[in-house]
Amino acid sequence: EAQVTQNPRYLITVTGKKLTVTCSQNMNHEYMSWYRQDPGLGLRQIYYSMNVEVTDKGDVPEGYKVSRKEKRNFPLILESPSPNQTSLYFCASSLTLGHYNEQFFGPGTRLTVL
Amino acid sequence: AQSVTQLDSQVPVFEEAPVELRCNYSSSVSVYLFWYVQYPNQGLQLLLKYLSGSTLVKGINGFEAEFNKSQTSFHLRKPSVHISDTAEYFCAVRGGYNKLIFGAGTRLAVHP
Image 1: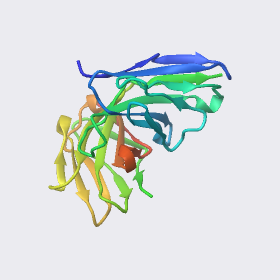
Image 2 (image 1 turned 180 degrees about the vertical axis):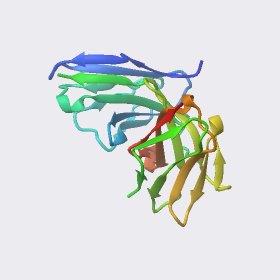
Image 3 (image 1 turned 90 degrees about the horizontal axis):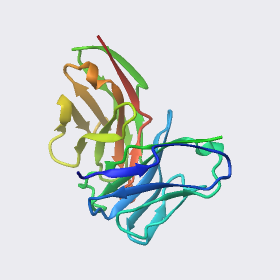
Image 4 (image 1 turned 30 degrees about the vertical axis):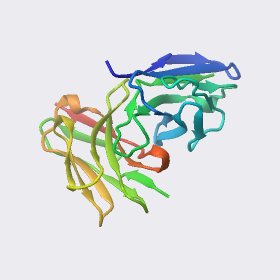
């Protein structure tokens, strides 16, 4: 089944403890991105990647890192999480940058930073 | 800069009634518009999209939307809703480098 998977689905952590949220897609998509969803703000893009080893900042990149060493994986790294990073995170992927390519979303990771 | 405004944060409606969820956009370039649905505890699912051509776009689950360039709107409609349509709906416009710019969302609550 074609899908985007994220792990973990739920995570409670403490301020300053490094964590990684994994994202994997099995559709051979070139483009992947991360969004965070906050009440009243919708989804905002954190980082995106156009292909392996090509990443760039989205609208809210502060406090996050990403890497794209393999085409299928695009982990989101929080080196020193803070409470304002408590949010619902979504990974998305599409075949290429083309506007006609649908973006597929993962199931989400709900992160709480205490 | 591109932006999306969803005019209603919550829309309550009775089952089998029609519903319209309103979306206005701002864009100075070619416009590609989307509606996504998020069911409780799930990811986002594409309902429909406008890329070009006919301004009336039909999507899944009986939803449709009309692209109105003069009013910069892309309202979502369904003639008869079901309890199962209860969800949060997001309007989005495509930005640079395939970024989706989302509205704040509209919670549709369908009551029996």
